[in-house]
Image 1 (spheres, one colour):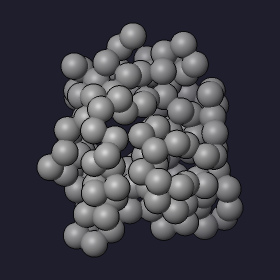
Image 2 (cartoon, rainbow, N blue to C red):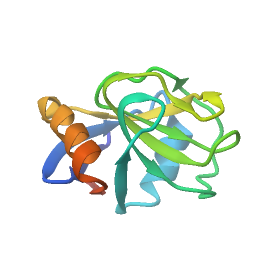
Image 3 (tube, rainbow, N blue to C red):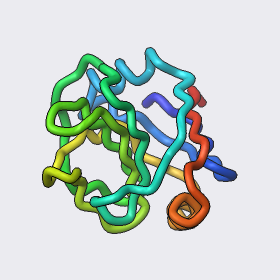
Length: 137
């Protein structure tokens, strides 16, 4: 079980890659570590933050995809109808874009400090984009 450390805003989280359920997505993401970006609050999906990635190509298709991530689950949308993005749910989420519902690959799950996710969400909503960094643990 591959573990990652995630730093988002002032918070630190432990996480595990879902290698059995999303092996190609996990392998592609691991090759890009450390992955550094910013999270912004979602516009259509509910209680979540996302990393907009434009036409960034992770070279994966759909696997272990869902439109309803639980709090602490990361989804990678590989692009198509909307731009490539990574979404993290911190509360109730129905993954969507301006053209409608999307599904993304559930590839990473937070395992610590889940109680801090709503704080990260509110901070991102009211204070703006927050730095995020993914590293091997």
